[in-house]
Length: 133
Image 1 (tube, rainbow, N blue to C red):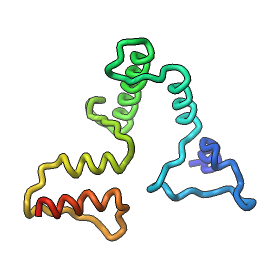
Image 2: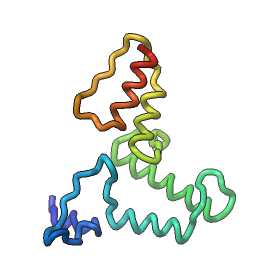
Image 3: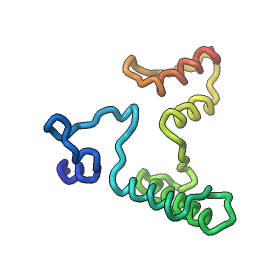
């Protein structure tokens, strides 16, 4: 793995802070976006800013196609059998909340965690254990 080449994908990492190139570890707060993601977001906002999956115009059609194509790429990357297994959420916190509150836990079920969990992973499970017992 070529770290220098990888760093070039992230524009913000090209700017020195106090004379040094930064290393970013606060991914629990916000993850840096590589240039190709920034470019794709800019493309969306400037060329087809619409709701996918429900709009009946060209921009909406394009948004739907882009989302479905993304699902296919991700499904292939992680070995999912069907792209419909891929669900997009706003962020990890929302995804963890959906999982925690969608599973059919019963009184006495065990949820394992560690003392190093980020609040977005800890709090949904704490709430679940309080409500289910």
